[in-house]
Length: 133
Image 1 (cartoon, rainbow, N blue to C red):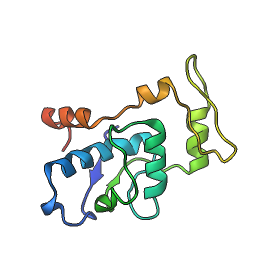
Image 2 (tube, helix red, strand yellow):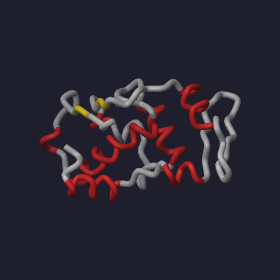
Image 3 (cartoon, one colour):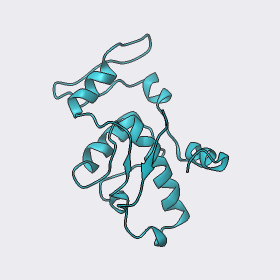
Image 4 (cartoon, rainbow, N blue to C red):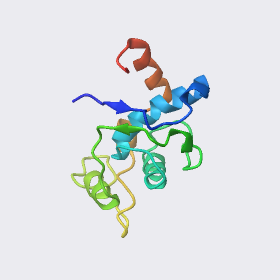
């Protein structure tokens, strides 16, 4: 299944720098690891927490730092925090850490984070190949 995205809800894209576009590309791919298909005021804190926990970006993001990207939508199905914790904590394989805290907010770590890594450099390579439209 393809990853589709829209940025029609994002404002002032004409004033973005190259770094803004690179981060935007990385955020598109990070929505898959975070299982959140949109960025807005309501989803930003949870999105940043999930992305930081998985270590899927090589930059630290905060709700304030991604505010300019509010309005991004993808075809990723959005999971609640509990659903996300259950999805990633279940089916532990050798080498995976499956500790989930009492609030359902911690996810599988260790090699899982390595497998789900989405880096800005990876997004650049995909864009160069023409796969990211």
